[in-house]
Length: 186
Image (tube, rainbow, N blue to C red):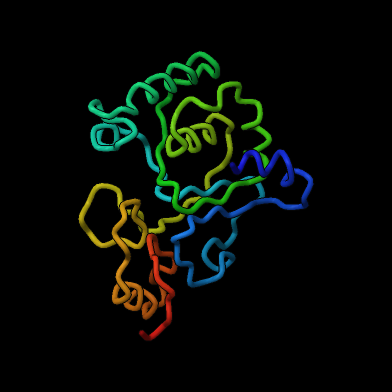
């Protein structure tokens, strides 16, 4: 859908980067304050990490008993054949991203866009395309029960947790998922 927007409209607009934020994400500070110094061709992906054996064993998109496993293996073969790439995949949780314009230009050249899942193919293509990553910890919860500001499971972030973070100078300012109308102090 984002690539379709880019092809039909976005490429004709003047911009360097766009932020893609899931609908149920609560952002409580400006993006310029949250991502100071992000450069023109840098990409940011929430929770980006190597797709290592721990991720592969536990993640719905890659684990051996998953219906998605076949697609994952096909993607590995595809990028090996098309890009001579075998350095290892990256993974992310597609909660909050900042894409540079150049990502879309390069992604248009991918001949089989349907293979693979976006949460590992977007960061892996960014690596294949040699795009620099903007590194920032947004507190993504991968496989723990520890309270974190961003998680990909439908477990709403608690108001008390948000208020505690807002009271800290260096506390988190982006939370996912959050389904209600947020009113500070309620």
